[in-house]
Amino acid sequence: MSTHQAPLPLCQEKLAQLLVIDAQERLAAVMRKDDLAITLANISRLLEAARLLEIPVSSTEQYPQGLGHTVEDLRRRLPQDLIATEKTSFSCCTAAGFERSLNREPNRKQVVLVGMEAHICILQTASGLQRWGYQVFVPADAVCSRHPGNRDNALERMRHAGIQVTNTESVAFEWVGDSTHPRFREVSRLFR
Image 1 (cartoon, rainbow, N blue to C red):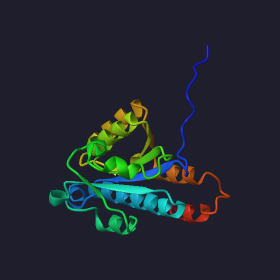
Image 2: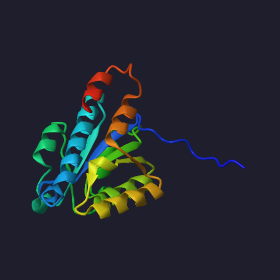
Image 3: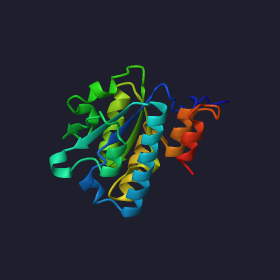
């Protein structure tokens, strides 16, 4: 008796978009330093890969009056014309104006989620996007929570719900797809 499993979904350059969720100053200040450094470095890598491959990027800020804006290093890497969606809801999917930022290119039905905090805004947004019909990817090394156990629990919950829990390097190389891709060398340099 054979069991049939669906094929493993891969991120595709022409279908993907990147969403940076709440990578803000005051949230960053309460993260464990090692976890934060890894998370920010990997978000930066994905932002650069997205720029090289012309993959659309969106971002959100949770109550910026209280939590500050996106951390400076990431803000410099975001597209210059990007305006973060401000929100008070934990799921981006219930924030006013958020759906418009995703629907700029309606054929891009894969969303890669990165940012803070994995067990609150990342998890709730992943659930909402899944209900909207998006295929959701969460690089485990590009999300963090104040407490690592909460992050691990969120990743496990998302995995069981059909969210693709992956890693930064896998996402970037899935976007490229082939060593003959014209941007392969530039993207691969991000991981040396």
